[in-house]
Image (cartoon, rainbow, N blue to C red; front, side):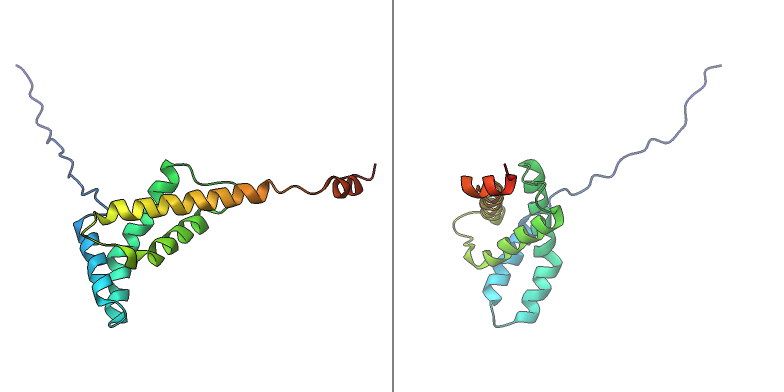
Length: 137
């Protein structure tokens, strides 16, 4: 007598992986439209929709392009990136393209400049006389 397997099949629920979609773009447009007239609504929009998208965007760019260095703390770097994105939020124009593309370029440029500043600071050299005095030959 053949046996049949009657175990239920598990179907994985498909998750929404879009972290910077149309809803975030619309929230940024609304944020810019409200401006300084209604700071309470702007704050509510930023905390609920914009900030999580900016945090995830900066996390992905830092990890994808390997911008984390030993001289900086990861959370500080991510916070600085989100702050840079927030400072440029009023410069977004929906007629010129998607918000995701605009803020990705801003985040990459900020991280490149930050990385170059850290590299320059680590390569500062002293004069030869100062080095000789320190070595005490």
